[in-house]
Image (cartoon, rainbow, N blue to C red; front, side, top):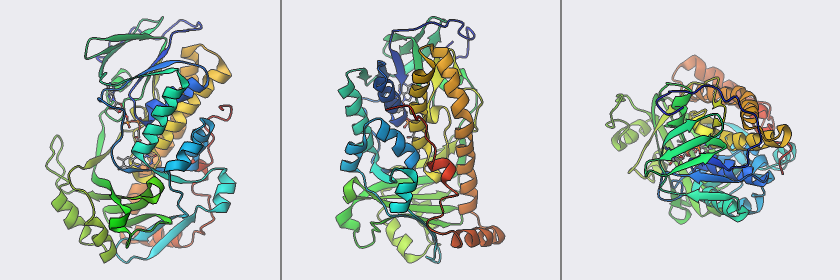
Length: 409
Ligand SMILES: Cc1cc2nc3c(=O)[nH]c(=O)nc-3n(C[C@H](O)[C@H](O)[C@H](O)COP(=O)(O)OP(=O)(O)OC[C@H]3O[C@@H](n4cnc5c(N)ncnc54)[C@H](O)[C@@H]3O)c2cc1C
């Protein structure tokens, strides 16, 4: 099969393969997949289209469901060197500055989940994954490799790159992100624009210290916007994400969600938020995009992973966490089911599709709730938020409590 959807059908062969895996995409999902495979003794080649393995200059929240996996992969020491460990997740009304809700991330939380809630600079996590992959001696990391075709013949898979090179593998894991070309083998769906846009970036802490809330991950919420703040890189940088709805959205156009609209949207927020927004970098913006869940992401020897499989709105900070879970579950299935790749990929798909679909849907629903302008919804939402105790973990239990790979590591 190839990206045009001409399929040879399901792979009938079930035998042990000794050739390495190819992972398409060297983002957080792809590198965690390569590292997870290496930890169970399997080699892989990671093909990344960019000239370097790197991530944009912004932060990432890592909830205990992802930290559990990263710990099993032996990354805790490295994470402790770079991460920041906030004490609370706080939700504040962006107009009145009233603190509506807080989740305590302290001792009780960490005892309950066995792992802390961390926030990190994306580049720090990617570097850590990259170096850990290299250190295994089992991961070949190739930049400047844009994959243009994936062809399966039942015995193996040929992955062809734009530069004419091609790689044959026993199994292919496509972690090529939201705009995944490999996904076309499974669905002809298109990314769905939420008509929201995010500006994000980090500021040196000395420039913003007077307003930085070092102990908290803060989410200011309001009608058609939300604003997130937290420290990263050992507290040396402050990460800010300003999200808002653009009323000038047009399909196939770049002329919406402009910096002028950012300022306009945030005029209706309280002064502390308006002031914080003045620190935002305005050079680049990220449209908020997801896709609907699909029931199948694997076919024979090809499997999707991360955003390629289940892109979601980032409102509950779980996209990368779910990619990390995917990677661990995939490796775990080899441990528990043996080496038959189609069997393992099917089991991986069976275990992951339901959970990730729920996370995708929950992210959308959370967006409706926090961005609502409807007075009744706001009244009920705020009532629920105000009455939630900081040590009541019931709302997040199903997400944070999940162990994606109990046998790994
Ligand atoms: C504003 C914002 C905030 C977020 N905050 C959080 C958060 O706090 N916590 C969290 O868990 N998630 C968060 N997310 C989501 C998270 O960033 C993504 O879910 C995650 O990065 C997905 O990782 P991935 O490896 O699947 O895909 P990507 O990071 O998109 O990586 C895909 C890789 O594949 C490469 N590639 C693509 N096509 C090809 C090709 N044809 N050939 C070779 N290489 C290819 C790309 O260059 C890229 O390196 C946020 C997202 C946004 C937009």
